[in-house]
Length: 263
Image (cartoon, rainbow, N blue to C red; front, side, top):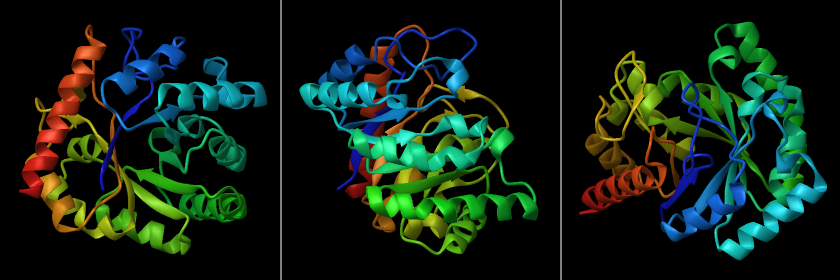
């Protein structure tokens, strides 16, 4: 059964020059996300230089767990975006923190400065991931690698990890921006997929409201259905002046496509 979640920070105001910021009103955001019918929240773990994050302290983690339970909205996953700027060697700490707040998955975005662009870089990343697997097993947490690579290359790298705790995250918007046909491109990675990010982009361009860019969502959701995908779908949509309304519209867009693909 596919669950629909939302990335943290999409339900309040943001600075004009950034899409991802940690929300100062994260407690309210849990309540709003629950009221909109989302089934879980993907917690955003940004670089430590961006300010205090409750996941970085035992007191904060206890409050996150308590507030999540009160809102009736689980923390389904943690997006460890800080490792796009900080050494990946800190990943086991993030895995343990994720488990404390009830998350069963840590998304590892190997993008931009953290992207895998040489064989040497690939070897370094694989070594760090291997060193983290003991903590993943202890915590019951799966790693989902998000890569700016075609689906077949992504599948090859995940298979090189050769461990059931290492899976893939497919970002429909980022793959569209690379000029890929997402309906065909996702097929090689489907058996390894733990999570899907939904956002829309132009080919070679920025994020735009879901449904207004170049992402071929009808074919994409049909491919997920054919492949028997039953994992999580996370809205990481573009938003501007009406974050709650835009989240509701993006939610409805995804639900329509899921229902259409199932019919």
